[in-house]
Image (cartoon, rainbow, N blue to C red; front, top):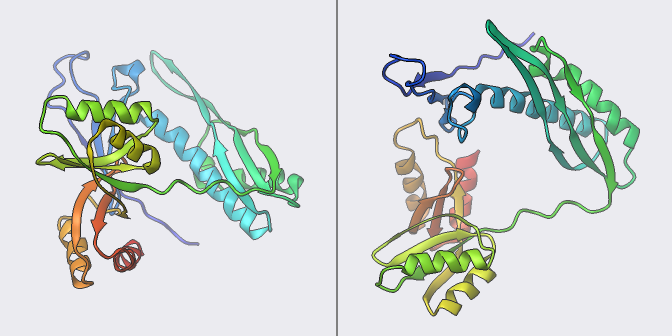
Length: 283
């Protein structure tokens, strides 16, 4: 028997509970070597609807544990899963005394490679439920209603994100005009920053972004591939460590910012060398 231990440090962001209606429900959870989690009560209980609630996290834990158990079983039984998505739903009943979850229903949609055994793929969901640690720890019913499809096409890889550097005119509204042009072109900005009239934006659709910049008549300074790394936000010195590793490899970092997933985005002068450093960092 193997025992695994998990730890977390929770801190409430408030400073007084003088009345039920007035105190903040926001909290922070720190786990070793993982990004900080900021949560709140559910909106029904005076929480912030933009934050993850404990109820959200419970449903997500059940759904993700089932998926990981299922993928492991498929890999061991020769079922080639090309895509997996789940729309999980939990129902909770609150009473004057408290409340509890009535059930969670999983709706996984699985695409397997052509020639795969559909019935086996379906049956493995039952075994995944039995082997899921989270499901085994819950006292309420968890149902799984899978959909299996066979396809001969692998899902499209995620789009490559690139850094777009633009010099803004020194005038009010210049950034607004660029943002509006991106919106019209269907370009989503996934990170970036700027200083002294030069802005850097992380975009997936760089062709459309370039056209938007040129249509405005703004100066395009360049488009380049980036290196993405995730820092342990709970460990001081991470920025220095990755910076030193890049420097020791002869890589000059020309621009740095973060994306919407709290990952560090680096523009560099030697991409292959920087990717080697990043690969070692991730491992």
